[in-house]
Length: 203
Image (cartoon, rainbow, N blue to C red; front, side, top):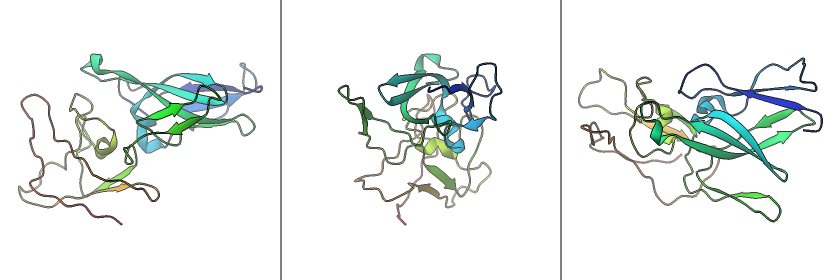
């Protein structure tokens, strides 16, 4: 783009998602710049691995593969608008949208999503970060528990009756009408360990 080449790459994690990076150069022969995150690093590129970039007018669309390890039939492509600046030699996917619209008359896009928590920063009192569980899974938009994307589980070894908390940083002021929680639903474990009581508070 305008004399700048962009190279996107992902790390060697098999089917698992990771922090994808980009590099730039003014010649295919290089030299190439250092690798830079193409999305907020804590999102693991919004749980994808880079596939390609589509240009529609002045809108650039990131296409990432979200592979469901152990159930590849549930794999899918995720498409997100991204910012590309050839003068600054940067590209970035600042936000995740579960729904957005592209206007074919001028190729502008608009946010039409309802889930305000998608891929926002999550902190927790404790979290099992293994076997497909993790606090980031609270806001990944999935409603089903499958291998690699099980959901959130507090750290093992806790007493049977205790309090856990999760905090989601929405980034700025958001307006929403409800909070939806989905229980574990993999075969044989439907509803296991779902909280017996909970409350919602806002900052």
